[in-house]
Length: 474
Image (cartoon, rainbow, N blue to C red; front, top):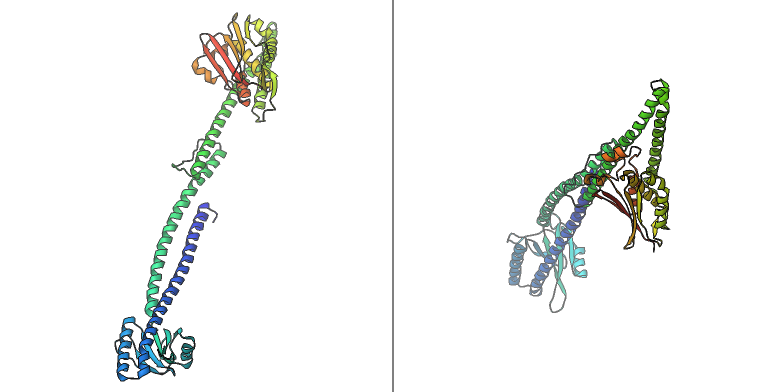
């Protein structure tokens, strides 16, 4: 029984069965004892009444009293469906009757020890034949007949009832109870089976889906069937995990495809020109020119590898080191100075709006330097020659906002959300930036995400502007 469904069903059904057995046994025992006890109480009361009526006969011995007593005994026997015996203190039976409206003659005497018990204890109660007076055991109670004036014990009255009718009634009651218990048990088994199946079916589907995940199939989903319980929440969480895994797999495939493309182009160029030089296809006077191309492509490969290492480090999941307090204005100025050669090479002007006082922020200084460098490098590449770059720093609401802008081709609105994807290049950038690998803005976005900061981009009327935020130091 390794199945969870079978174990759950067996546990539930077993608990229901055990509960029914315990409750049934306890209830039947209590009800039977209660019925017997109540019957005995009624018999004792009837015997005491008959003893009270018999006292007049024992006192007077009048034949008329004897006749009247026999009539009363016969009537009482008929009404109560039991036998009455009136005995002397020696055990001799004087009067007796059963429920057939006729006097009944009983053979034998009541044993002396039973008479003694009635006289000493004032009552007798047992299942007995009264010393073979009755042919089979009956429920018998006995009480003494006492004189009202002297209190002397004059005789003994016994009331005997056949318990077969009581037992038959109890057995019928047991049969009804057992039938009801079986119906309840069948319903409990059916409901337990349905509930167990409903509980375990999503788990089986999840197990199958997990196996398919292991085989690389990430499109499977677990039906929730509108459930709002814990199993439904588990199915929703499982589907969210599956969606995330599918997206990760899709990004992995795109990444492999992109990196393969980025590596293939320069490697093909290098291999082709190298083979051309070696086999003499390229004339000697052109070799230097093609060696320069090979050198440029080699450097592009080196930059691609370095960028890939940067991305790998950023995506390693290592927690951001302790944020330090540093002057953001100083970082902007140093990056701007380091790019002076590139800016002058494109004949660009720079419009800086930086506060004179320090603007202290919290973050990783080296990473933020990389962000500023990538944004300025991107702006220089795509700025129209002879235009002006913009670099501004503003403080607002506990945040410092850095904006980098350039004038040139407008980025289509549909391309803006894709700028921060790995290896993404617009058609315009592919023609302008042949040396780029499409990772600069992705690195920017990744670094700012690790700082829990935002970056936005707008491009209209010939002006493209990137703006990112950092938290001010207190």
